[in-house]
Length: 627
Figure 1 (spheres, rainbow, N blue to C red):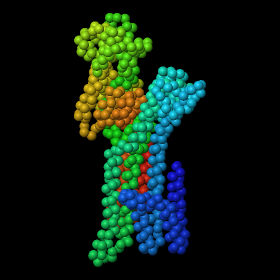
Figure 2 (figure 1 turned 135 degrees about the vertical axis):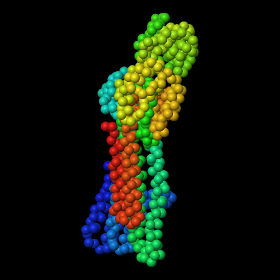
Figure 3 (figure 1 turned 90 degrees about the vertical axis):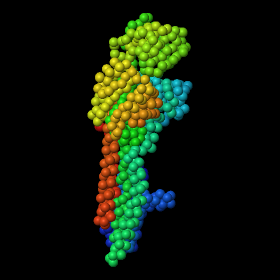
Figure 4 (figure 1 turned 90 degrees about the horizontal axis):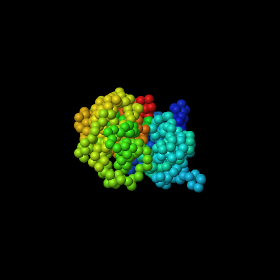
């Protein structure tokens, strides 16, 4: 418990002990009243102060105002009736503070989950100068700087290992408990903890653009994105609280006046007591507290599992997902392409590969990278000029003054160059030299190990339709879709065609169903933004995709999509349970209060009891590990 929570607990215990003792001790009326007032102020002074501040600031109608009016009114009635019974006024404050303590503890528990994620923020980076390690602020480290990460330290900035090997603990980022082995030439992301060996890492990003900064930014922003349920509760409370105050005033005044007009005793005390009970019952704490807390806990639980949801509005949309559309490369497949063959070549294989690798030297596409890896030599960019990239087709460039066209069959058709088709399944890069066909290179992508299980898990989670979009050839796309069990596939798409396909799918789906798009590349950003909910692969995905997405998967595991949907559905279910419980109990007790059938103890249950139950229920949103 925090210091503030401990002080509150002490206040609760002191006030409760005093109230119980005063019921058993026979003290003079004056002394008894003074001790009751002391107990009341010990437990309620901060509520009274907040109520006064609210009135002075023009924000009168809140739970502090309701509690202050109800308890002061109960004390005034006890003084008027000379009963000396101040138990109800103290009990209302006491149980209200118990509810507040529960809420504070629950928020703290949720916040600790977020804070555990925040602990990935590194405090320093080690730079070697004159044989000594010097600690510097990560913000001061420039791209290309070599940093040293010792065992037990956090990797402060994204980079590539140039010396050493180690096991990395990525659990704070991905939720994955098993350490990941890392060696020379491996990419490492900031926020991991180096467990064994000393690593020298050449940074590839500035700290502000590194993975850890992006994650912290996403989590910090998530709390400001409110769902429809939260907006409804906020608007509801603004209208509801003034209305019940007016209703309580009418309940205190109209029945006694009616009694007097009919010649009966006014019975002011009973009706004022009913009005005060009505006020306590009407306090909207259970709704105002539990709904945001449920979302906060759900976002915290999801982040612990490596699923970053950028706000409770996206949590609500994710829970309604019935159609999931995937980009293929880097999402369902590893995006690790390998050259598996060179066919129909009219020149030596090495020379054809050299021309293709040099022509593709300016592209960051995985296929281009695979050509450069297969070439295996250092790329001399000065040999390449006049690069013209043709979106969705390939590119044309001059290598040593020779015109090289490298791309798919559409490029050959566009250039009117006859080409040889390939019977093997994979991505085919056709190459033409000076307008003459020179052969083609077969490149294959590898499916992610969990992709098939991920599609199956989505169907078990209630997703009705899975779709795959890709720029690959139909034969390759159909084989991958059949292997994984994807319901529908659209192939040979240009980047703009993906948006068109998603538009068609959005038009065809049922009105209440939501469509999610899962992608990782920079060309996926427009589609991620257009879908009802965009899900980006965060570990290896592009910054543009992560920025455009509403949900980020920190370890690129497609299994986490189904997990995210299950977490969101559990969270939304808890929200609706709390709303239903709070409203049903409140309106039953309000009705009883309005006809004078509810006493202050029933009011305490309707307010504090329901709040405590709702808060305890909201905490369940944190428990998502076994979903």
